[in-house]
Image (cartoon, rainbow, N blue to C red):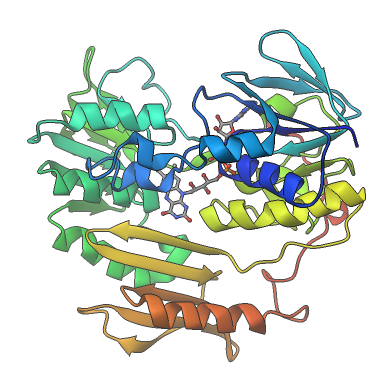
Length: 405
Ligand SMILES: Cc1cc2nc3c(=O)[nH]c(=O)nc-3n(C[C@H](O)[C@H](O)[C@H](O)COP(=O)(O)OP(=O)(O)OC[C@H]3O[C@@H](n4cnc5c(N)ncnc54)[C@H](O)[C@@H]3O)c2cc1C
C-alpha cells in the first residue's frame, strides 16, 4: 500500500493515523477533514469548555511534535464529497479527486437538528468547536431562560453547565424519564433526580411542537400545548452518522458504515472507525470506542483482510451537576438492577445490571475505583457464548439497506 487516506480529522481519524505509523506504514498518509481545526477533544465542549473552566488550547488532541512525527498531509477545511465504486478515488469538496490505496473512514456524526428551526437566532446544537464557541458566547452574562430539548447525555451536561453559570434551565424530554433506553427505569430516575437537585426543571413525557419567535426564539411550544418562555434553546436530540458523502459508493450503509467485527467494510481496503462505524452490528458514540477501534482497523487494513476483531466492552462517562457517571456494557429492557455499593440517595454508588444470572452492564456514580474493577471483570467475562449484544454480527449477515436521502 503506497497511499492511505483518513477521512475525518478528529478523534478516531487521529488515532488511526497514529496506528498506521505505529504499525509500520511508511507510505504517503493523507488526512482529509471538513473542519478547519486540527483534531480537538469533544467531551469538554459540554462541560469545562462551556463553563469557561478551560480554553481552546486545552482541547487540542495533538501537538506540533507529534504532527511532525506523523509526517502526514493534512487537508483541513476540505470535505470529502464522494467515493467511487472501487473505493479508490475520493471526490473532494474543492472539485479535486484523490486516488488512494487504502481508506479509513472516520467521519463521525453530526447533531440532529429540529426541523423548521434553521435561521432562528438563539437556537443552538452542540457538536463542534464552532457550536461550542457560539453557545459559550451566547451564555456569557448569566440570567437567561434556557430550554434544553432532549435529556440525553449531551442535553444533561449542557443543562448542568448552563445551571452552574446561573441561568434558569428547563430540560424537555419526550420519554417518561431521561436516558431510559441507555440506563433503564431505575437508574434513569436517579439521573432525573440529579437535574432536580441541580436546580434544573425537568419536564418529561411530552415532545416539542414548535419553536416560536420572529427573528430570535422567544418560546418553546410543547406537544401538550404548554409554552415555555425561552431566551436560548439548545437542541440535544441525538446525532446522525456522517455517511451522506458515501451515497453512490459500494459500501452498505445503515445507521453508519456497515463493518464486520474487525472494522472492515464490504471493501477489504476500506475500514471505518468511531461514531460513523457500525462494527459487528453495533454503532457506539463513545470516546473510548473511537480510540480503541483504530488499532484493530489498521491491522486489518494493512493485512488486506480481517485478522483481528474489535470487541471492547462499550464504555462511556458523563459529568453532570458535579457527579461522574460511568457505564460499561449494554443495558437491555428487563435487566435486573442491583446496587452493590453505596446508595442511590446520596454519596455515590455502584450497581450491576443482570440477566439470567449474568452481569450485562455496570454503572457507577462517583465510584471510579470500584467501577474500574467491575468494568475489568465484566470485560474479561465476555466470551463468544454470551448472549447478544456481545456476540459480534458479521457484515455479510446484515442485509445492506440503502441510506435514506
Ligand atoms: C459535546 C460532546 C460531549 C461528549 N462527551 C462524551 C463523554 O463524556 N464521554 C464519551 O464517551 N463520549 C462523549 N462524546 C462522544 C465523543 O466525543 C465521540 O464519540 C467522538 O468524538 C467520536 O469521534 P469520531 O472521530 O468518530 O467522530 P467526530 O468526533 O464526530 O469527528 C468526525 C470528524 O469528521 C469530519 N467529517 C465529517 N464528514 C466529513 C467528510 N465528508 N469529509 C471530511 N471530514 C468529514 C467532521 O467534521 C469531524 O471533524 C461527546 C460528544 C460531544 C459532541
